[in-house]
Image (cartoon, rainbow, N blue to C red):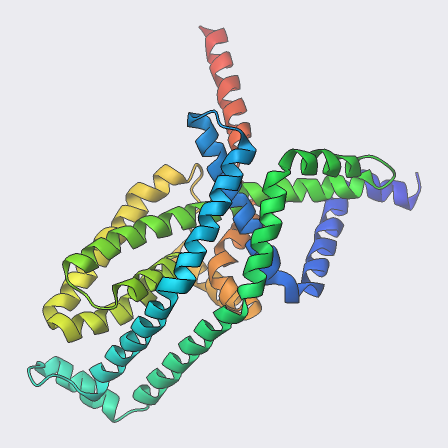
Length: 355
């Protein structure tokens, strides 16, 4: 047996090389990373929604997909024409609330708050805070430059989901021929990627929607200003595990203090603790078939590293990618739904055989 035949027979070594090739190709395509990630996210979420709808109502898949994308386009139209100007206005007002909190404290501020304000005034934190606000606005303006990428990824995901069966049959043809081993290994990693990255990302998205809805209702009851801007901030921060709660709590606390004083800050902290408890003890166990929760240290370490290499995207996809790596190396494997159903069926058959 020659070296090449030995290499093909060694599955672990072969898959390791294929994985390194995939990583190298993605690195060379890093300028297109936003397009790749957005296309995958849109495709995965729409296919999951389509599967959920068809589970309850027998409607043709193509009809559901067309309806979903028409709804998305309609929402985007209303968002751009009606809500985007309000968003910029409210975001600017929200930033002013935060800056005014430091520059013009209330006369009724207690001793602790006065001490904090004096310390901030005599340090460089105020300047750093202004730089941070400027950085946030830079990120907001960069979102506008991603408009083309967003539209193209939405279009690609539409054609992929609409022709899912055709895509599947055409892609199967790569699994034949002299280089079938290469595409079989790519298929192996792709299946793992969807079952880990996709599941974790879908869970984060659903949790973000629930967190945003509950938090927005509570803030509306408290008559908080800039509600639309705060809701968008909460949704984006909810996509970041653990750290998102802390980040979103800071501007909400500042605005809450300017509206209702220390009592509102306490209310907001209690509200966030309750909602975070609902997320941790109700949503995660219900949505995640296998627990993928990481210790706090690992979570923050992964977020820091992924943000360094992937920028803002790293804060959102860092944990799903790390979960995928854990699955690949066998540290924390995640089984697909089909695999779990098969195992459950085999276990039931074994139990019936014993009885």
